[in-house]
Structures are given as structure tokens and as C-alpha cells.
Image 1 (cartoon, helix red, strand yellow):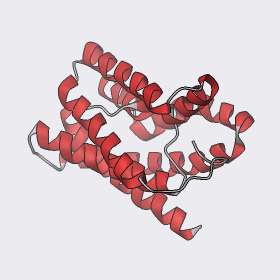
Image 2 (cartoon, one colour):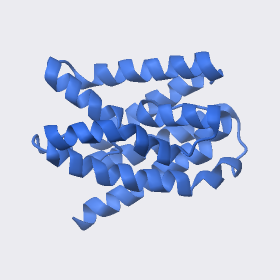
Image 3 (spheres, one colour):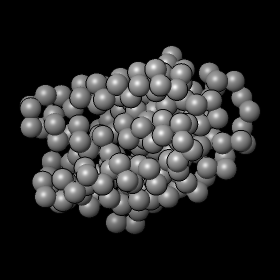
Image 4 (cartoon, rainbow, N blue to C red):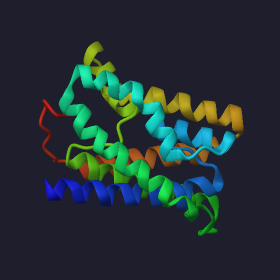
Length: 194
């Protein structure tokens, strides 16, 4: 239990530093609910963490009725990571580096943060959680569902607010790569898996 809590805290801190310190300064996107939260921040200045919580509510209500273990494991990760995202928002003016370094460092930090959390069966929830439900229901690969959601988010951000599609795609790919590397060989309890 302590190990899971520490992974959640460390993962949330790394995820938040990646988002606030490296993605936000150059208006880069990640995929999933975080990406939607970033789009809303760039358009209207909403707080990313609070927006993620609000956008995730319907998914968590569904999880409450569908699979409570997923609800509990995801809820803690959602609340802690959202708290740190808003706490670390002043970092967005701290680093002044070229966009390609922001994309690489930010993508790696976010991916490591997510990977640390997933290793202990907790996550930030959101669209990854919804993707798991869809994939399970339709008997398709969850990675494909996540890829479709992330692609839609990147295209939406590019078309509506002109975010850099290429560097945002680099972020999404690095998040996926780091997550895969950190969860490789991890054992997951099927009843509690996302």
C-alpha cells in the first residue's frame, strides 16, 4: 500500500512537471483527457487539473457501476495527479528551451509518470479508462482505441488553436514509449486492470 501511494505521488509529480514545465510553454498537447484539458487551458485559461477532474466525472460514474476496483484505483490517481498539475502550474514560465527539447523532455516525464502509476495499477483515468471499457466491450486492442482518441485530440488542437501537430505527436509517442518501457514485465491483476 505504501509502495502504491509513493508511486502515485512520484508519478503525479513527474507527470505534472512534464506538463507544466515543458508542454504548456509551447502549447504542446498530450493525448487523452490531459490533451483535452490542455486545449481548454490554451483557449480559455482553465486550470488543467480541475478540468481533467470535471471531464472525467462521467467516466468515473460509469466505472462505479461497471467495475468498482477500477473506479477506486483510478480515482486516487486522478485526484493526486490533478492536484499536482494545478500546484505546479507556475513552472510554465520557468524553463526557456527550444520546442523540440520541450517535446522530448515533456513527453518522457509524462510517460515515466504514467508508467510509474500504471505499474501499481493506478492511473489518471480519463480516456484511457474509457478506452479500456470500449476495447473490452468490442473485443479490440485497447492501444488502437487510445490511438484513435489521441489522434482526434491532436487534430482538434491543431485545427482549433494551431498547436504544433508534429511536436505534439512526438509528445504522444514518447509518452507511449516510456509507459510501455516502465510497464513491461509488470504483472496486472485482471480484475483490477484498466
